[in-house]
Image 1: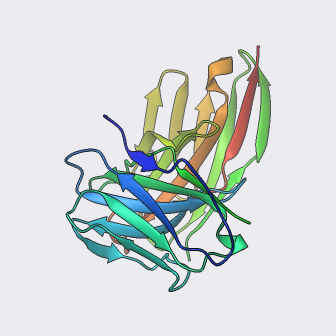
Image 2: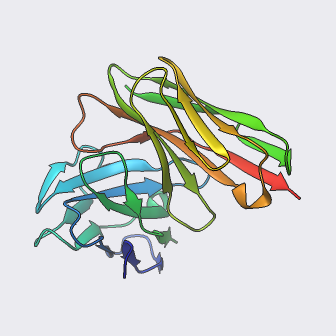
Length: 112
Length: 112
């Protein structure tokens, strides 16, 4: 497809479980970003990849959150020991090193 | 720390009733200010980038302007399809890549 693809679109899990969220960026985009958006809030930066490496992971809230982009394309956001406070929409965006980001539709995570 | 404050939180207009949305920001050095549109259940969609005070950008019924402390998104003769949440974001000089700090958004409703 032409846009950023995120799967799953919805994920319901129980407290304490492990979750993986996948992002397939626009082909050719070198930069990939993860943001988190809670209801009624703006997106909050989590991590930024340039190529395969995490150039800035200072937005990750704690060590339960981890993200990879092993081949410089698809990325996976991993959340261990989920907590109810992790419930949010996780947005992925791709682009180049400008502020013009192309966002996916997000993965809505609900932790019961 | 970057701060982005948008007002009003919500705005209801009649079709054809022009108005403006405000974005006030505090950053140590502005690299760029960005406006995005977000429809329910979707990711943000890029609208404009502004780089320096006095700059203006236009697209259809929307015009964005920038001063040293704030940005305005002017909506002229809006239509119901302009209903969405409008997000403002800043990119600071010292941050890596395209890390953006978003405001909480203004939810615009245009009634026919």
